[in-house]
Length: 383
Length: 257
Image (cartoon, rainbow over the protein chains, first blue to last red):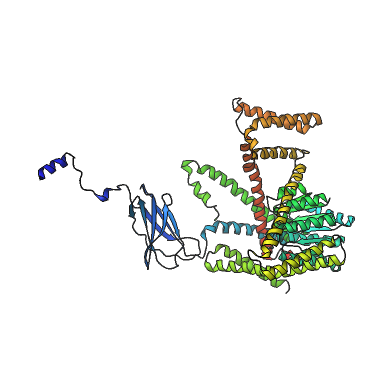
């Protein structure tokens, strides 16, 4: 019998007993499982990476072992070879294993080295921002110091700001009020702060010309600051008695209700001049078109690129983007403020240089032999 | 003293918040969230001042019988009713405040104001697209490309033939108005189109208007937007720096530099 069986086996007539280890011969465990504290975060997070190799895994299982024992914490799809575990405690050591799963087979990797999460004190991913900030601050401070020493600084003409005097004068001649809308932003918006600075200069001129000023507000904090600024401007112009408490007033914090109220104000008062300076959203055109229909001179300015076309279309003068921030320096002609403008210009020149150099490097990095230029470009990534 | 304390607070908080941006530690994040709460609390106090201003403004308007004073009565009555309903019956979902005042009054009124925008856009577009100058003519052509490229019919209009029509129109207008600028513009377009045909072996390119519209939006338009945004970002940082260092004191109501 035994020789017969041997003969059958030799002839390949009888299959050998099943060997389970050979059912999925190509399924290999994931390689290079690395667990590390997630960088630049506030702790309680561990990042896991592994390589798929050339296995036929259909999914990955991630197992975490802590003092309480092992636990599967994630099931990833085949292409997803990373996991961020945010269900961990700081300073507790964990190990991780990853399993490749195909059909009913599961092959586990070696456990990772123990790792503990901790919060960081400095976000190294933002070093590039810090460097850019330091350079820019240095430029601004340098030109402010130059201005302090009496260096004469050239500032190009801005038509919209040159027109302020004319616009206030027109209101005086016509005996009609000036409406100043400080935008719909909060006091935390830089555009609102810039607008409030311009309001101070405009209010001073209004006080000198003895015109009427109306400042409807959408934000209660902006309202309180605007009121103080206008009051102070009147005092500085030597006409504190001319300031009227109700010239600066709060309307509503509802966007379109505010737009309706200011539209109504323009329709009733028929102002000689409208200023729309600050942060604006969809109501920009509603305000500017109504103002245009009442025949007022309109000076607008915003840092929102989406609202600028509407203002350019419907207003006589528009301060585009940074011109809004330059306005208070331009109007007051304070050397210190003008110095900061110069710093801004050189900051822009630096950015332009970076853009040109970055474009050239990006182009060069596409040449296979010069791929390392791609690493230089990654230094400029902002996170 | 009246100025130096706010300036000192501004300087300390400005520098602290700058440092906070670079520190991801939970203590730093908690501090940021705490300051956000402070802003909300200050906002709540300011809202009381704002409401006071609103009431005083409208009472004064009614007393002096200023233009449109009767609207002030409506405003004050609405403010009182809203406050009474809000305080008396709450503002939770399903309340009178939500169902009547918010859903049936505020929402439709806001929607009506927003809807007006469509008509204002039409009148603003009419003013913007009047081809009075070379720049306005260019704007008109670009606007037509984008507008036609965004509607279904644009997918069937080849850019080449669109430009031929524009070119002929420019020539006709230039001849009728004896406008040198338009004739030069039309001439330049003819040269451009011929050069284009020459390069493509005198085969009319199959570029459709949606492709051209996409190019206008993503290349020249995006370049201009980014240029403005660079300036805005730097201007914003410079303004913040001036406020922190106390160079810009407008927010304090002016004062010596």
